[in-house]
Length: 419
Image (cartoon, rainbow, N blue to C red; front, side, top):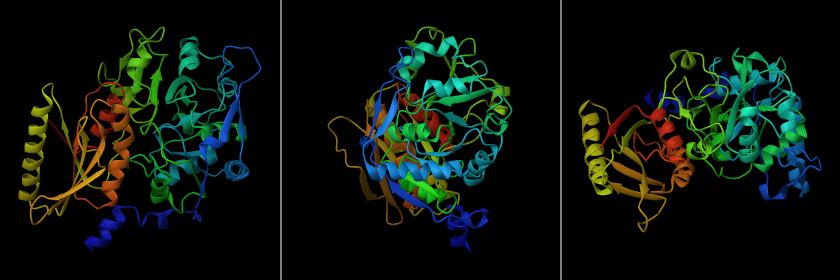
């Protein structure tokens, strides 16, 4: 019984409860085969309104298949630069419902709408005009890992916005996603392509593991080069606020005109009403959690050696405490960073004692939060696949991409310690 309970919790029985079963196809596409030709229009968004050129017949065929499924109202897995997305026609309420069903996503968790041009963005705005606060930000940072909160229009189903008068919109930089949306001719709603609450997928294999049989197609565009979800900016607020840290850093946004008073949710302010009825994903529910319990060991200001000593002491104390409570721990996982010049092997294994094995994975180098962002979800999923019973994760400074990393780790963790 215990074995059956464990594999059920890991998602192996979930597909039998989904009404539509597919023989999920995974098709490889090569991002380098997708290029973009700049628009001849001499407007302020000429770069963003570039059109795609697909330079390979097999990749063109893959896009055609994806478009066909999306036009039938199905949801499919697609690569983006942040994480893999579960995409469906954002203007079709029935198609959107299939995202919620495939992910087992709560109905009050809004979706992000993805566009492939500013012309497409304008088409879903009530007055077809980009809010002034976003114009320079879009010119500088779109396409890219940035989502903006804009007024919604009647074209957007209420299931996307959860009844709010605003909608979150992103223009992905990944050439496959961008080309696909353009080929569809309609925007795509696309949360992360994982089972709701689990670590976000940064490889097509992650999507297949979670959603096999629930969706007809996954486009495999290789690993995501950002590795965490997009930053969500609400520039309609006064002062403007980052509602979810992500791939575009606070430091970069702060440089933009009108962003001098930029705040970060939970760091600079809280809003219980917003948290209970969020306007964007990632605010209300626990996210990013593997099957194993996650213990986050965060760092206070201090020397690197003091943290190393504190990390070592804390994980051993916590392991002993969990064992003392009667929980059997046969395999421990760790996610660590490495100092410059240290060994950068992805995996190190060692015996804690004669009862317990440890698998330690490297997320990236200290001082390189962009590497840690790419390695975090990959590491959590790898340790889950290795069936560890407990995961200790090293915290990182909340600078640049480190702010997004710590946002995700705090949501994934059952316990947090500072050393």
